[in-house]
Length: 139
Image 1 (cartoon, one colour):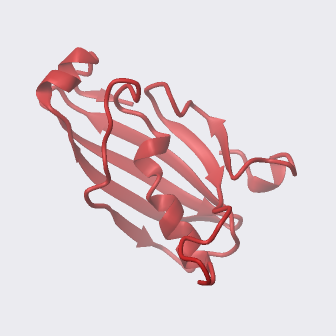
Image 2 (image 1 turned 90 degrees about the horizontal axis):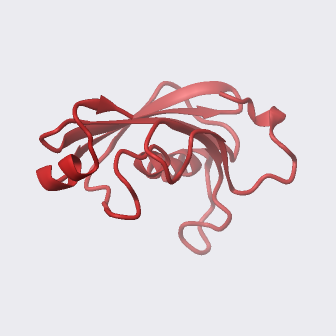
């Protein structure tokens, strides 16, 4: 993981530091919200983390985004400590097997280090998984 202070000062609100948003595989990105989630509401460090956590399975790609879409039906975030700052790093990995069962996992960091884990159970149709060539692959 590239530390936040090593990123350029003019970085975008979603700065990919490893992997790709569009290619299957693990990926790491630092991100922050550029506008409040709810107009007029303060964006606390906890809100920064939970909003970023919602992007974990979009950072790590299991299937081709050009052919398949998905939603976050459910996810769990477990915090080890209180978050600090506006920037959150997502170190994301997705796993899917040939039957269409999978899990998207993300380790979240802030400027002080690791602070949480996020897990999302995922399902895809067997045809979608087979068409993309996934067979019990860690991505």
